Length: 447
Image (cartoon, rainbow, N blue to C red):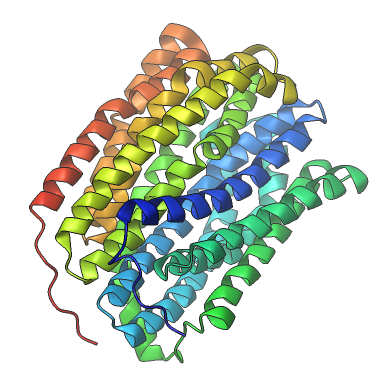
């Protein structure tokens, strides 16, 4: 059955909170799976292993960001078609979006596999730590296609308003990851490779859950054909290419920070790796919120309801501020426990405490940027999001990180990274507000 567009009526705050809560739980679960990898590996008491995962994560984050960009494109096309009640069009978009995601992710996996040693050199990985990172990536890079396709399934389930099943896509995968980690790392004695294998298997679980929701539960598919596949590729590309370009700005910035922090040794990189796992768990609701805004805006865009679009953005910004303050409070209170749990010492411990106590609240500016990106991508202005994200990843990252590192070492580099976000978060919120106020109704869509 095909669901009627549910976001064009009813309380917008309720839609935002329900979508964010369910999506946030799902995201938090998968991020907890990643955090579990770092936690169990930290018990091996070898900082080079944790540092290796930190280097590998910068590359994996790049590939995942491309998958997110493809999901954004699918959301924009499917949710808009649903809002306009073009159900057959929406089903065709869904099928072709999954197929295009599979093709692109396979090509990307091959490319990253070939470039992996060069990319690790750029990040500053050396010696034994680089070898460990290569072993970890060798297992996880081939697992990109099932993850990317599952992310597209979750995006389309959110477009259908099925927040619970979109949550289950990542929730069940994370549960599998957390269960399998100690088995492969300790019981089978596979260490770093065990963590990679458990994550790869969890991605297969995610794929199966996502496709079950699309095909079996919603029956949201139409028979594929070559002409439709190729024409959808053009439409997807118009949104996906800028969305992917937008999304890889974040791993670019993170990779640059990794290269700067690597100057101060493996302990500093290990601390940055732990922060990289803590941050998405603590702020999962923010990422979920930006993902939830797209379908709500998209359906009201298709229904030509500009007033509800404006209200959605205002509410999203207020909700993101509240979530950020709650997360900061929790991190500040638990900071010493986090350091102890991950057996962090020296530079690693100092960086974790700095982030939890002082830098976490600055994430509110990053959340404003994410929400604005979702709006621009959904409303056919993905190049706006691209410009904002890359400006933040370059102008707002490189000079601040370099100067901060020069003044105060790894602590200064990390602080500079977060301070550089402030101006671009404010600019994104203002630009998004002005854009919505001047936005015109979409042209009628053909069936």
